[in-house]
Length: 132
Image (cartoon, rainbow, N blue to C red; front, side):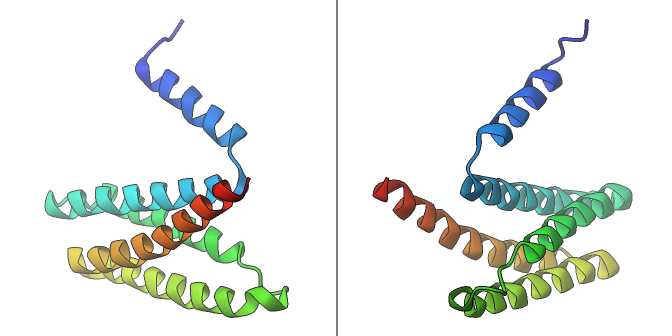
């Protein structure tokens, strides 16, 4: 029987995902994306290109998923969806440039933009929880 700490961590994450609200799931995606970009920065510094590329790819997949979740159908959401979409496209370009140029500066920019979006999302969650 394998009882390594990694299994307990995986169970904990799975449990959190299964019980999370839609709002919390988006927060978790932002957190994972930020984590992957931070790891990519560390791999740029240590010149570990395969690991860097994997982390950037994972971060980009999250951004692509967040873009796919945007609501362009509802009239009241279109302006926000367009704004977020342009930010996500910008982040994608930063991630691509970080990979192509092996430059941490692009990762730093992506971190700033994602943190700004996440901060707004976190505030929405606080307001939503207060209304309950």
